[in-house]
Image (tube, rainbow, N blue to C red):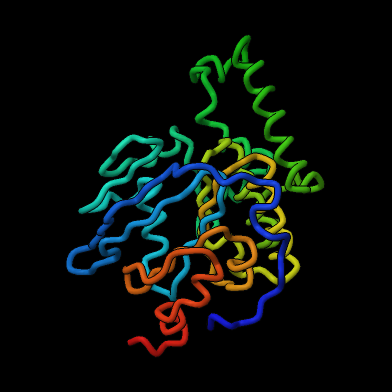
Length: 275
């Protein structure tokens, strides 16, 4: 994949009708290693409220590892994470989810035998306050709570335009629709920061156009901060406010799409002449 690879234009200029806020998440000098293999080396960058922040780089650059650090799957050996002004060496997945960070995965991680509605409902788990017994009896507050959560799930289904498949088991759906359902499950948690790991991988042009539209709408209408990994440079340059570039676990570029596009280190990495 080359930096000058042509891509379709999927949406309006980023930032239209939005106000980028202050830094909400600051990653400072993050280093992560597995045995003798260094996945990330002294990486620093920040994420601002309401922006779309892309992380790009060749295969093996450390992009997914960085997302795993942000949402607590991995704990870095060095560096710190500052989230909403709170300094942390790392956070576990549960704490990340409770504090407003949701995630989709490179490989679809849905419950294939469950319906679209039920999959999206699983994203509401952290919002539910009724105990197991009350939920099992479906009594009183538990019943009212589930009704309220189902209303939220139905709103997400309407937003993603998947009403016609709401009762369909996810395993029967084509790949592009499964990706949309996974986005819906993440949105059900009402995240402040949404991490998207290759949300358009394996999609055709029409499916990419739809997904880009939904990502822009989530960012614009809900005010959700979005961090995404994506290999399609046409998509990245069209919808991102800022882009950070990794290569072999190191940061080689950071800035607006135009600044990154003109960065010689980035060009070298993508053209394969830097190593």
